[in-house]
Image (tube, one colour):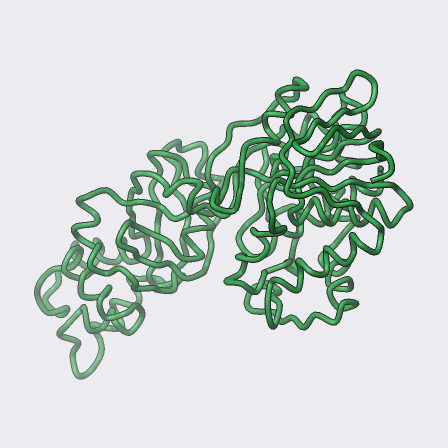
Length: 403
């Protein structure tokens, strides 16, 4: 490198960092991209089962959680899922919609990593990796001290992600930098994460590990006032040897707090009282409730659930109270998780750099000119299904444009 000064330094070469560096450099800015990893884009590589759910065509502010829910509107409106799809198509990467607007690569998530690296090279981004950042200072311009030398810049972008999946090299570095510059960080916790059940529930349902079922699920808050904010997700749930997982559970985990219950509608919106009445009216008569329930959920779950919640006698012999009790449970099967499986199994980190400290147009810290935060390190967390990648692209684009 001929000079150690750059117009922008981006720390973190994940989805947001590489995209921001590429777009800024393609606008004739001299950009240095720093990462501590030998291999870039590890979270991208493992995402979507190795095929990278790179965006969602339905992405809107309603699909994101934040203490400041309107913050993401500007960036998402200015760089949309369609914009990223056009970029993917220009690199001749085949993709398909799986379900619910989720777009995946036909072949491999490595294609998205290669595309981002190619975009960086097109803009002549200078890469510095593996290199650890020892300190960051700002006497006048930014001074970044690394294991491979000192570099200065007019703008500094923190794109270091959150605490989720530490095996990929995730750290709390971005939060530490925010605190160094007196920028608030909202409370952090694991999101899009499996939930654990305690011993009594595991004893009852633990043998069902591997059983998946379609459901409508939500987290039921302890506080009555919070119930008006309940969000339902109709997707599959999965019983595991440790508790609950599957798309619906990962979705509601971002809304779940310690002490809350999770609620499953096993009939997916169908009125259970009406369904039971239809079963009782069948000819020939339905004698086994578990066998009837197996028409809507897997047999193993039907057997265990019937044993736990239904009278042990033919359906025709149930009284009105028993019918009402079973109907209520079918439409609202409540389980109370003991906790989450933590950052090791979480797909995202909830919370982050307080968006009230940032400009929604530029992602720049209001009180520290030139300092930007983008991607997962910011307190904007998307639903499962490509939304977090879309936030990475949108926040990176907003930042790059301002640089």
